Length: 247
Image (cartoon, rainbow, N blue to C red; front, side, top):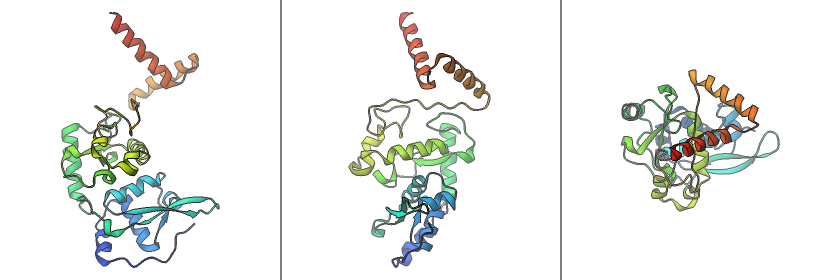
C-alpha cells in the first residue's frame, strides 16, 4: 500500500533537525515520513530496496529521532508494520547526524585501531561495506561520547543479525541497563557472558575468497556423514579439545 494520511503539524525546529540526517538509509525513512506521515515495511522493501526494514527504523532511532511502530493493511490484505514519528519531545539528536565528515573520521579511527574488519566475523571487509554501530544500543543508553571504544564496525550481515537480536532482548524493550549490554556478545564478542540475556555461546564464521574451497569440502564431508555443518564443526572442536587434554 502507499502511505498517505493526515500528518500532525511538526515544529520547524524538529523538521530542521531531521534534515540534518544525511546518511542514506535513515534519510530515506525520515524524508518519506515527512512527506507522507508514515512509511510501511512494504514500501521500505519495494520502493527503497531495504530488505530488513527494522534495521532502517533503528538507524533513524539511533540518530535520536523517536519512531513508533503500528499496523496497517498491506497490498495483499495482510497486516504489516509501519513507522511514524513518536513523541518528538523525546528527540535526542545524535552527534553524527548531518556530520558525514565526523562519521568518516570515526570509521578511520576504528580501522586504524582494530583493522578493516567486521567485529563479529573477524574477517577483513572492504571499507565501504563496514558500518559504524553503537556497542550499546542508542535505545538503551542514548548517545555516547564520540570515542572509538563506544563504537564497532560491522558488515551488513552482522549488523542485521545484531539488530534482530537486540530488538528482541528484554533489556532493549524494558530494562534499559547499560551494564547488561556491556557484558553481551553483541557489544564485546571477544569477552561476554550472555547473548541478549540468554545463556548462549556462539561463533560466527565466514568463508570468503580462497577459503570458499575449504567450505565446499567441509560441506561435502557433512553430506557424506549425514550431519549438519554446525554439528560437524562442533565435533571437530570437541575432538581437538579431547586430544589436547589427553596429551
